[in-house]
Figure (cartoon, rainbow, N blue to C red):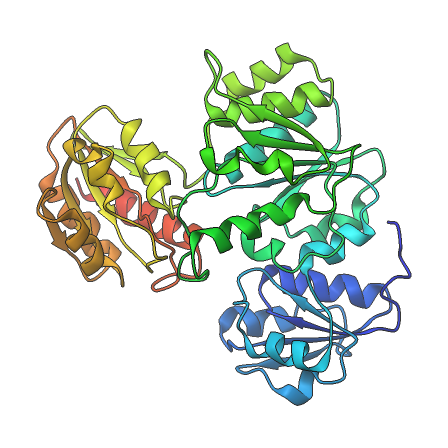
Length: 422
């Protein structure tokens, strides 16, 4: 690691005690910081994480945030997913305490080049493929961030000649200060997270923070098909490269190939990685064929655009299962983009089910369910042999599940149990 003495003896309070908060607490403690962790939740996960701490000297506050717990901090670290309006961040601003993200902590210590990927859709696929490409070309690569391990969990193992491939969200980018990727990618910016941001412009500005610290020796890669990105070269100091869909490649693969060219990797090897890639869990994942009906797990689709991509890449009639916590998006896009013609019926659940039903406005026949299990049963009853049951929620999972992964696993469990009985 570099800058290993940077956090020594500093009083640091971490807000959020899920995977990233736990990893960051252990990392900072090992570097000599005086660490505390606060989480508004007091549940099975946060309680279990106490047992995973390196030391009892790390103070933990669960079930609330208290001003006294953070008031004398030298630094506050924001874990992913903690709302920007959370009380500790308001207190920090009042008290003049700097707030940084967990990825900022790890990036200060990271000796290797960072490749950072953001965008409304496609982040996980592109991040995964870049990691696979680097490994196939004989490089040692760590893939983390919103995908897999937190950055803080792996930074102690990274050497200068390695690569760190990081999936970053707009939330994580809000609190960066010095974070500086060698290669930054903004894949696209579409309507999303308007439950968190006041408007589309505010959301886009958060995404743009990925390149604010880059200089002329760095690279910024932008999707050429997205009009929202076309003016960004005027704001960037880095070398700007627009990637576009090529014959035989989808936009995600085109972005990865662009990274490969910058790093001077063998193109034949890169394209072989694309050919052998079977996809990622919870993104257009085939689960089972039951009585001629295909079940597809697309729990990763937390936006309308992601669901549209799935719908447009399925050729058979679809019974769609959708819903969850609303993110302020426009569900009318399903109608506007003519995807409705493929949807035989929609089974809706979660907090957003009424809003989605209203958006579909009788152009798509809908039915509401009170649980994911009942939604799957209802969808199967509506589907005929040769058709597809697609679980593509268009919403976040937090009304019913811990995250999209838990939601996807539950969908697969229900489907596989159904398969056993048929």
